[in-house]
Image 1 (tube, helix red, strand yellow):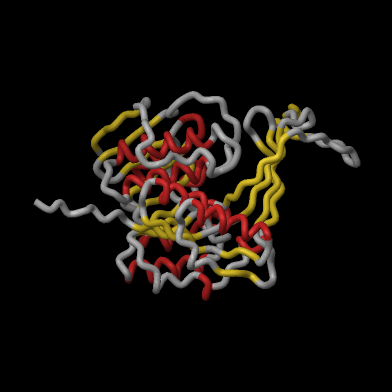
Image 2 (cartoon, rainbow, N blue to C red):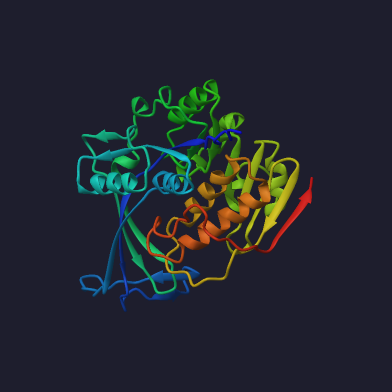
Length: 328
C-alpha cells in the first residue's frame, strides 16, 4: 500500500533582519545598582577604553530568527524583509541560505544600510543594545506583496508600526486563505486602537502581560488569556519568570519554566518561543505540546550567544515541564 507523504506547511515570516555583534567577557560590563533608577545599569566611563575579550558575529531580527525555527523543524520557510547593499546584508542572506530559508522575497534599500546592533553582554545574561534600525524599519508597501507567495501561515513580528502595510498584508493573506500569527512590536503596540482593528484577521496572538493589558482588561496572565480569545481565536500571554498562559477557547494552558538554565544571552528568546509554538501548532499539534516545544526552543536559545545558535532542530529530545491544562 502506498503511504501518502504528509506535506509540511509553509510559513512566511515578515519583519526585521539585522546583523548582531556581541561583545562580552569584559570586566567593564558589570551591572551596577542605581538607586535613582530602581534598576541595574551598565556604566561605561566617558572617554575611557573598555577591553572586551570575546566577540561574536550573528544575525537577528524577529522575522529572520523565526524563519530559522520553521526551517529547522522541517517546514517550508520564507522570509520577507528589507536589507541594504552592504556586508551586514550579505551576512543575513548567508545565514538564511545556510538554514534553508527561502530568501527570494527579500527587498533592498538603496538609501539605508542593513539594521545593525552592537550588544554589550553582562555576565548575568542581561545586555545593553546599541541599535541602528536602518533598512529594517524603513519599509515600503511595494516590498510586502504577499500575492505571489504560496504559504499556509504568516508569522509577523514587527513592521516598525507601519499599520497600513500590516493592514494590506493581512487583507491579502486572508483572501488567499493564509492564517496569521502576530507577535507585535513596540511600534504596533503604541497604536493600540489601530492594532485592535486588525485583530479580526489574526488567528494567533502572542504578547506579554503588560502588552495584553493595553488590549483588554485583566491582572493575571490567565485572566488576560481568557479575555483575549474574545479578540482572536488563540492567544498566548507571557509573564517573564512567571511563565505563560495560552488559550484556544477550548482549553487554557498555564506553564512555568521549561528548565532552570544558566542564561548566557536572552537575545531572541521571545522569537524562539513564538516561532517554536507556531512550528508545532501549524502542524496540528495540540496547545499543551506546542507550548512545551516553544518553551524548550526559547530555553535552548538563551544558553548560547546569538538569537539563532540555540534554535532546536527536528527530532530534538524534549522533556516535560510544569504545566497545567484546564477546560474553559
